[in-house]
Image (cartoon, rainbow, N blue to C red; front, side, top):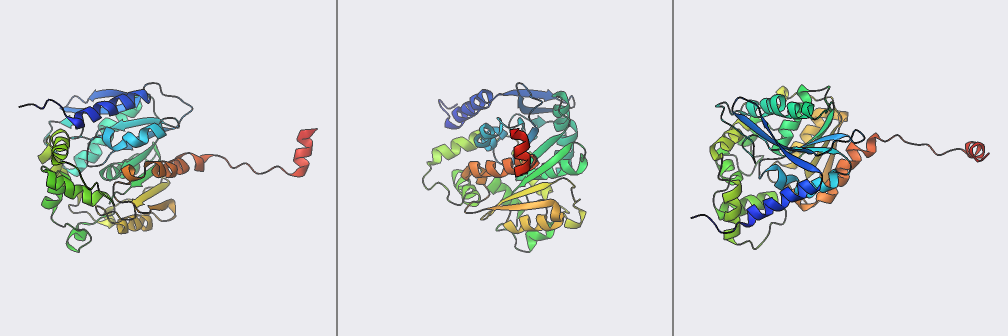
Length: 322
């Protein structure tokens, strides 16, 4: 029997209204081969603003993950917020669902097409968790189009052997899938304990199950396949070094992708990257500290590009005064 009321669905409606009021519009791109991609794009793109792509992680859809940050970003950027394949309103009926499909197909056939359709030549990319894998791959493949990169708590430097060597609290990928794709209220609480430093203590099971019903009941097997493919045959020696200036942001107490992976990525990229560790925050720092996250994004993506004006000498001031 269908529910009379869903708090999660109502919250989604609020997010859609919030995105629209922030100057974004919902678009659907049919790629013509069984794949449909959804993306929020500016209602009116302004040439005076830099273009910014926000790529969400493995949890809920793009609206839920970027909702607290979008309102802070829109005044400074032309913001583009897509749903990845099998998340939100994006899906495919194609049978190939490996990580290679998710990254390369998403980049080549969706993101670049959306960017081109909206007159975007160059773009900066922010990737959150799983979205960081997408952002990194995009930077490696489209070096001329991607200007700057932000990797947020994304274990792109992980190796398959890390699973068996105790880096993660859970080494069985099937169990990882059960945690990241919770189907019961108890599993949802377990997921929250991994992602938040201070998870909510009292959340009724009915509300957690409502969230699961809306966010985690579609494309469950397809998403599990993406998890299985994530670490398969992965070696640091195979990871290209991206040339773009890169900001790495990590939660100090991240239990999904441990902070060691952030340090490893910084070593891999060398002087081309800077690492920011957010104190007293975990994997979900985008929810825990959205304003602090925005401060780091703005500093790296905007403030660092502004020309430095040297103070005028006394002689110059006298010339201007005359």
